[in-house]
Image 1 (cartoon, one colour):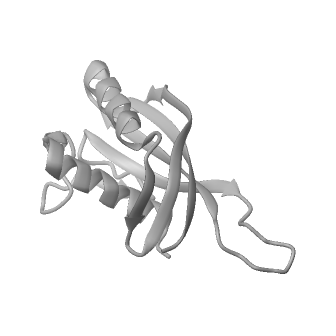
Image 2 (image 1 turned 90 degrees about the vertical axis):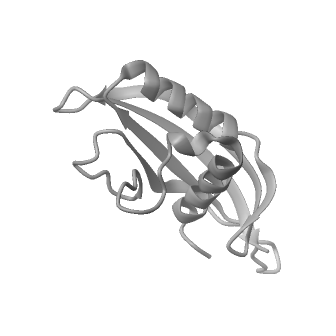
Image 3 (image 1 turned 120 degrees about the vertical axis):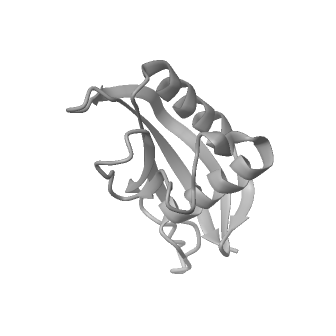
Length: 141
């Protein structure tokens, strides 16, 4: 299975393409502004998806395995506080409660918002940074 962050990025891409959301989320080409694992210094306005510790994977009495319970954190950085807040709130609306979705051979049974959105801080360039956390339940499809 992929890192959860890779699949979540794809879910947001697919939603963006079908809804007009992509005007805020640029996923390909030289102007890419959605990143995985490390927030770059540029561009000023960007989204970064981090894999974070979740819960232990399923282990049945007979040793069978199946479901994993990872979590992710999404950080939105934006020079305009209200635009950043709106974007992270829309990401919550897309992901919270999403169920029975298969991405890259992985079934996401449910995605739930566990905390956020919330203001994290302002970076050295006075950009607002917001975070939101999600718990995931997934298994191989």
